Image 1: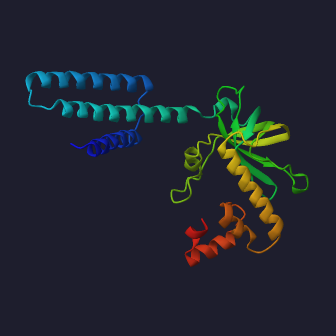
Image 2 (image 1 turned 90 degrees about the vertical axis):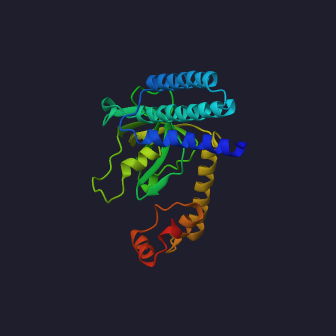
Image 3 (image 1 turned 120 degrees about the vertical axis):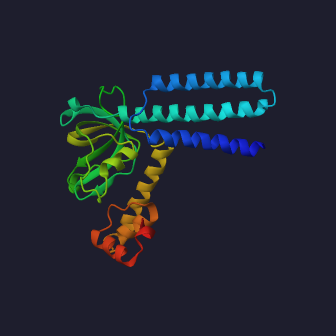
Length: 263
């Protein structure tokens, strides 16, 4: 067996372990995953030792390769289960739902501003009460004439009413809850009162830097384009901000078959 073939089989074992975990009805707890992995490796080593004692024609390299594939498979299962448990455990507790929570959060993404509402992803900073997820979506109702410019990297202290994301029950419709879960957004918070800006760190992470750059480009394009008919479409094509595109325009794109180009 060549080295490339062995690496490919090991890679397939890792992918197979991760995929198998996604098909499980109930996730194994972390302690069980570690125990199963350890038992499997010990049994594999014992079997390899017995085979080497009883059948000397079996290549030692083949035995070690088989053990490595099994170890890669079990490690992938354990790691995937660990990541899944972390995602599921970071959920909004019922005790914090639909009640006011005073939180300190950092803005992570470009603010989507429609009408009198701004929406952006944020990270809740410590000290964080138990039962409140780390990543949330913040919705800020603010009149256009007194709107505060929210920028990625800013730290805010605000009173938020949190709730879990819920999607429509229509099986053929867009699954908003699954979309939020995929983005690791485990709660949606509505701002109450007047938040307080604590500080601004525009270079805290690459995600913040890119989001801030996109928001700057959007602001510059809006100043230049003004009230032009297809200004939102041009902005969407330039930086991917689709929220301002009119529903009538999306209908035209659907009928002409160019929705995927705009998206």
